[in-house]
Length: 358
Image (cartoon, rainbow, N blue to C red; front, side, top):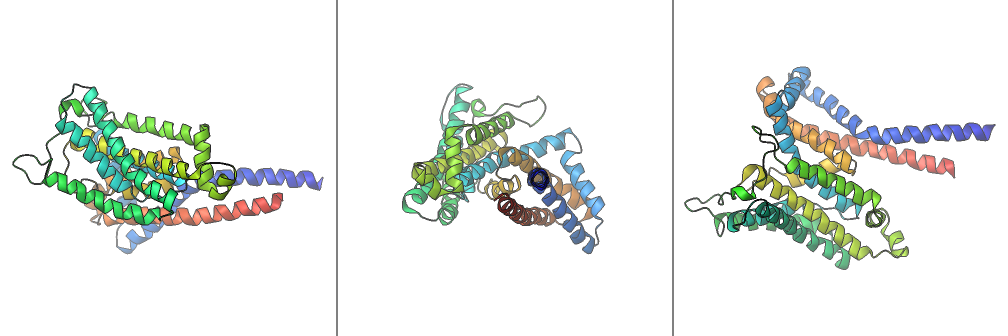
């Protein structure tokens, strides 16, 4: 009888732990807003008014909701990039640089090639992926073959990519008569609007397609199993006969391709011209998106929409309650802190359950 009671208790604990694992991102976000409310209250601002303005600024009408989705698209691609690399045992801090290289390659194709639609668009997107893959494969190869710290390498390569783009903006790709921008990409290389009369383009469809592909790759293919095994236990993967060097380099190259696609889609769907510092930090925000999304493609989608809503609603909150938009970054940071704390609790519960089962 005692064995049956213990087994029933174990089943309930496992189910509770699974629900906790799924709810952790939500609880982290709620906790960040709660602490953020205390911060706003200390500044003499009504938190309810501030958050109401934030939500209204992000989803108050169809135009604002469309803008929120547009701001989320690069975060979806870049968040998937960080997730894929991390699952393969590589911490990709270089999504920003890969995004810049993808944008550069895509703009070169969009301004220098003369092709009909949709071939021109497909070539530009493919070159954007290629640019990101090249920039991601380099630190992946160095990590896999020379055991060089990928965090340091990718951070340094971010600066190289940003200044490389700056050189082309002010040099070979500079628009005649201007010193701060490139030519506009041709109409045949632009992503068409998803709905007439809106700014929402087919990049959102491409983002959702990549999300499905990454999910299937990671959780429903042999290659994905090997990637996750290398990320979980590289020594065990080697013992099992997996070529960890090749897997890590491949995961980083695919990650770079996704980040490069983020830059390509943004330039071909929204901005159309390459300028200095065109990214507000999507590649760095992608790290937070991946962590809040629990390194799961579906979680990345939800987290990207959350961060996109924060960015889009920030100005409305600032206007309504006269508070600086820096509060948005505080909320983002708090969400990550609470998520890490919750993950620590989750890991302790898992270890306790494993010990109980033993």
